[in-house]
Length: 528
Image (cartoon, rainbow, N blue to C red; front, side, top):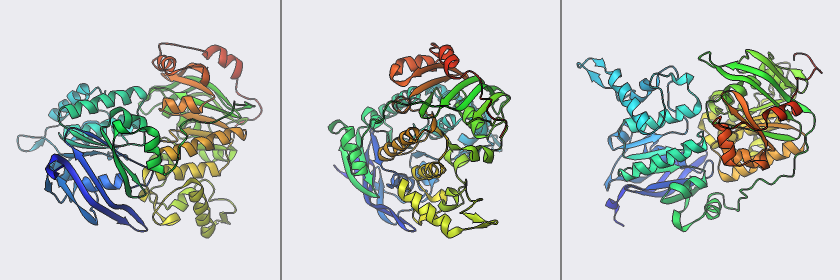
């Protein structure tokens, strides 16, 4: 095929960072009106390659052709001029700006040659939101928006600029199954309008569902480009990680023990002072995984933050291993045995300008053997980080001395998971634990969570991935409007029934299960 039959062609692209070759002579082509999936393990160079196409990075070697003409894309503004828009995995939003202000930033409409025409921009945002079913309030502040809502704002930013070459970097990582299905329809509508899409994703099902072709990267090199109709999930997984991947979670039946987490009549208000968690009651036992299923915005974020001590509670009780931690400080909760994998890794999981070693020591730096009389044992901190990085396959250019912000999203996630597992918690609160991870890493993390369960630990899993909740959980609690609307054994329900409970149309097993398993908070201990 001739070059001018592609809207994008990247030839021999190489990019180096200190200690790592992120892209090694990669070739990529995109046809008009197609969806090209870009698949690869964490740290394979996918986001780097697309950041070169969008003008964030400059390639050390190689050429880029847009609609048959060689271009030097030296900034995002140049990319936008060429009709290229990118939705980033890590949001490019200003927290204290409104949705409209974020979307129009850098592309402001002006009236009377002097004043920013925010009203026109707001109306355009509203119409686009309605047109594509994104349900976004143009006047909401980003700091008050959920992670899922912020993702939709990023998508709207690209639509607002009328891009016809759209790069989507893990766009469904925080969306519910229903939202993912809706997005897939939207993407097909885009291609029907002549737009061309590059979809970076780890989700093989999405590739099979919506992509036309798929290009696979492994450790910076291209391992192949295939027509989706001619391949399958097993082949793609092998190309991505270089081995067979087991998609089914292998686990024996749970053997629940004593109550580890007891939540009774919990009420938590969100940033708008509305009840996000409203009378939530649940018990998680040693030796079981309880999954929380629900549509984003029904109190999951506030529930997790209340358990972790990041948000105050209005009423109710949270008991951890016999200790009432309702008003305990974060460190007190950690010392009792709380592990927390946060949904927003950059906001709550890492200090982005700290090194990998420093981040991995955040929960234990203040005590022996990592410190003595207030003096840090930095060699031991680094060696601990090296060991954890090897165990959890955390890849970074400069090893333990790499800044957290220099890691790929998936490697940032694995660093947090490594740190939390290293504390040997009695309760692991895992919120979106596999967000942004490739299938090989997901398989590993699932296995480690099951091993933690089998060691007699309790796991509270909060995930928008319904498959993950169903495959990994022993019991599933469905949250709707801040309450438990259903509580079922994982093997005794299906997606349809869970979907009905997630919408509030069906209540099942709540009263009988809570009477049997939750009752009242433990009286064994007082406040931590």
